[in-house]
Length: 318
Image (tube, rainbow, N blue to C red; front, side, top):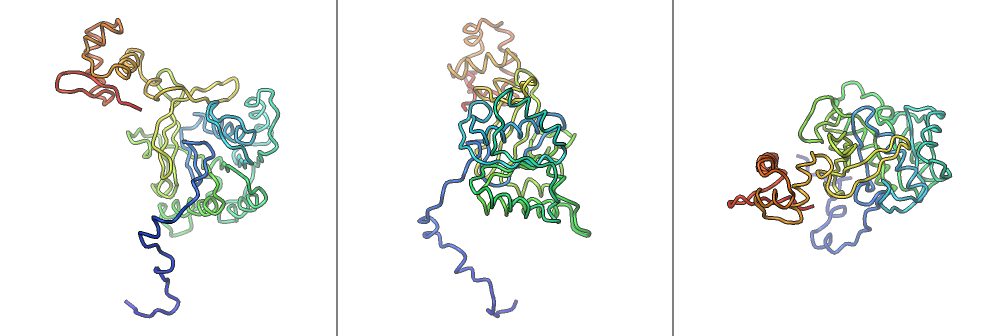
């Protein structure tokens, strides 16, 4: 190893000692949607036709207009750039008309149906718009595959995916802006929702956060799985209004809206009355004692309930 110091990268100047880092003060992260969408790069993934574009367009309209996101989360308004790279202007107008439902269209939302791929200056085009809109809150790229471009010859796909997301991340970090990359999921089913994101792990590895929108099986229309570096891991139950193309967030834990009625009743009761036996649950809810006993056992196996040595059940707290 060479010991030459000429033009060497000086870690004593660019790094931190632990005491100085702990004494330093930093600005809080900027949230486009508090608790869900933070500054940096977020991958929004889901199967085709699940409603990713409706969700991202709705968020763009809400933030630009200063309306609560998902119908309930207060946000700070600001300019939004929406790159609808699979749409036409006519289709965008039709979708916006549906979502707005007679409200005025916000002038702070900029929509474009064309942008050069990253290798041809797509990141520069986005940066130019951000230079002209310094108070911007959100950039949506729908879909990321249209902007990513082809992997260079001889470059492994993981490295190409990581570099492509990293290129957008430089823009997001420089401007302190939330950038959403709309993406697809694999057809195969995985228990870990992160494993469903299409492409290599380079995409999720380079991103600051990942949102996966899935269709729910029972009461909710969808579940939004959230995880990230600055975002607390959570699942949110969503309802979709097809007449307006609008997603809204349902109250309470997602599990309450995505399981059958019997399990939901048991969960709600045990959340308010922890440490009950199946007989006590049945007496209080007027459900069949045998049904409650069997359902509690199955929920325990599915890790939806916990149980102590005395056979008393507890619901997870959220």
